[in-house]
Amino acid sequence: MGVTDSAEYAEAEFTDLDCSGQDLSSREFHRCRFRSCDFSEANLERSRFEECLFIGCNLSNPKIRGARFEDDEFEDCKIAGINFYSCDQKVFLLNFRACKLVSCNFSDLAMKKSEFLDCEFRGCFFQNTFLESCDFSRSSFEDTMFSNSNLQKASFRGAQGYAIDPTGNRIQKAVFSLPEALSLLECFKIVLKDGTAGA
Image (cartoon, rainbow, N blue to C red; front, side, top):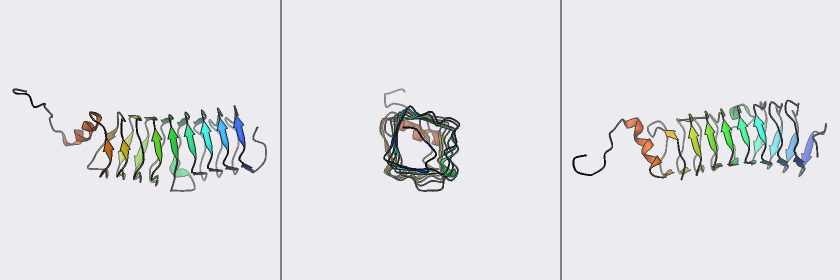
């Protein structure tokens, strides 16, 4: 199925759809499934995606000002250059699985209980972000910043590469795995040694 000039789609399935650079603004998609679709550089401004599933899709640098993403899921997708704070909402419940997230900005959003499982983060920003009870299990982080964010009860089980300053973020009851959790001490500039004599 292809995207025509219709303004609204419900429970539709789109496969191998090339929407790169196309104007898909002011559309509504309800409970739709997108598989191996290319939305790179597409204009999604003021569009609404509700309970949609994206599998193996490319969402690189789409225009999303005024768009809405409500209870959507992303699996094995590339998501790059998206400033989610430019959407027409500040509260998100999104689930990402095995996605590559590059240069995305999640600042000033409320994303309680969202999932980022087995994902790769590169150059992403979480500033003033409400991430309570979010799940980042088994994800990897590179050049990704958490600043003044609420990470209480979040899970970083099996995650690697994160740089989280516990003095600049709220991390009470968050779950981390060893040895990666030792990175939380870096901001204190302390020296860690084992307990063997003469060490």
